[in-house]
Image: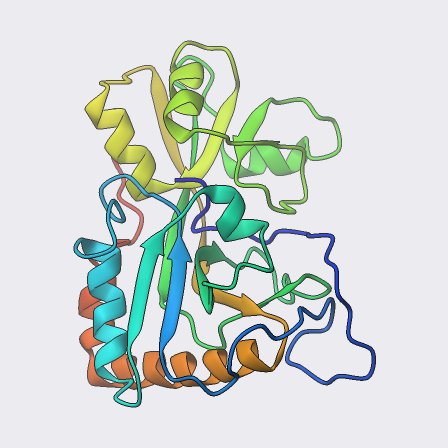
Length: 258
């Protein structure tokens, strides 16, 4: 996964529309599709086990559940390269993007994106370190300004120094070999890789739980899609179906060791 769930990213955007009023506080992206078209297409990155294709699996099934509560239109998705999902703000095929998590309140301020008004659930992030030199959240926070540890994580403003994960499998294998100090990532994808490749030199520790969100362009189309999908997410949650579908994507922190 190159994302998870995503990310409090800071982007340098283009196309600021002076005087326009949108949900975003920052960069405005020009509208490139009919604003009120009820058919929404989302783009996402490949996530081991939970989002490996657009038709079936935990994440596609979750969005199908949301779609049940959006009778006005249809939701479709495709799996795209990381750059297209997170950096190509002019992608004409993207009404929404996912996954992303909100590391801190207002994390989407002054970016070309706005977060969904409703979260899908909460994703548990785990700090993976070496069994011989285990690290915990407080260790990282205490050394936040010292750049003491080499940590690979999603490209977010964590409040401490990190390097971006390019390939999660490679990052975890580097950690298992003792070439870096830690990897910070969502537990499901990471645990899947750890078990698949029997990476038994890794120590797990719960780091934090973050809102799991969709994100949209900063324009009228983005506002329209955000309002419609957030309403559907809220209705799916009220029915109890959202929670049943989400638990197949992300579970609360599981306390175990490789």
